[in-house]
Amino acid sequence: MSKTHQVWLLGDNIDTDVLAPGHAMKYGIDQMKQYCLESVLPEFAAQVRPGDVIVAGSGFGIGSSREQAASVLVALGVHAVIAPDFGGLFFRNAFNVGLLLITCDLRGAVQAGDRIQLQVPTERPPTLIDAHGRPHTGEPIPDFLLRRVACGGLLPELKLKMKEAHV
Image 1: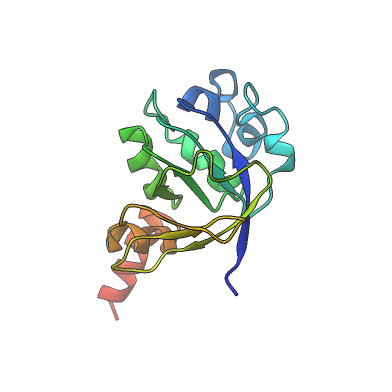
Image 2: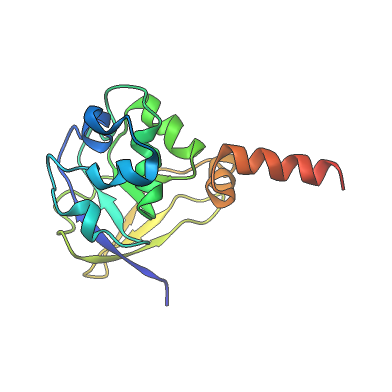
């Protein structure tokens, strides 16, 4: 049986200022993470558990280019963010810090607190199984991005490549 992940449900247009608020930018990630989503889901940072997933509406990660918006989600242990579309800079930053993004519209298919299964094979689109056993297909994720997430982000991936090149 596949591992299940608890759903945190968010709406449309969750911007980078909501994920990493400006007033918290003076802190390091470990302290900054306590402010993640405080304006829309105040309990999130205290209650999210490693392996949980965020299911959101359109426009997740729109706004500024701050890398911390994706980094705080990684620091909190978020396994993946699932949304119909993502802000372009956030998309790049997320994969570069090792955060899995799955492009799929699950609005109306899941509720907050549901447990869903994710199947993210290489060379095929990801499949998400909702709490009722219904499959939903996401957009394919390029293998190089899946490898980056598996390595923990761009820097760990580059270190691994350098190590492999010297063997």
